[in-house]
Length: 113
Image: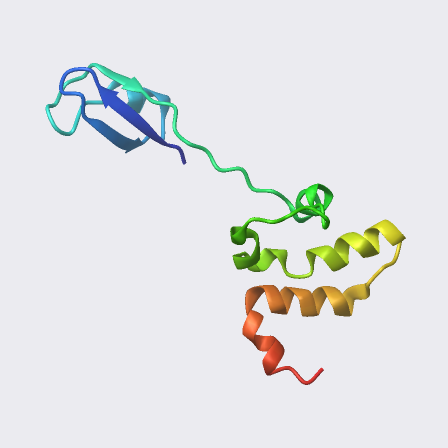
C-alpha cells in the first residue's frame, strides 16, 4: 500500500497520504488549509540488497566504514566470500551458526557447540 508525499501549492504544507485507489488521489485535499491544488513529491526510497548481492559487492581488502562493523548482517561476510572464491561449501551448520550470530551476536558467549 503506497504512502505518497504531497506538497500543497496553496499553503506550502507537506503531508503524507495512504492511497489505496487511484480515484482517492483525485479527491485529495491539504489537511492544513483544505486546498485541493497539490503536487506529489518524489520520496526517498530504500533498496534492500539480498545476501547474494551483499556478498558479491563485498571487498574484504577494502577499508570499511564504522557503520559496517555495527551492522550484524556483516558478521561472517569475509568467511563466506573467501569460501565462495575457493569453491568450498561451508555447510548447513555454518549457515545456522552464522544466522544465530547475526540475530543475537552475544550468543557466541553462551554457546558450547
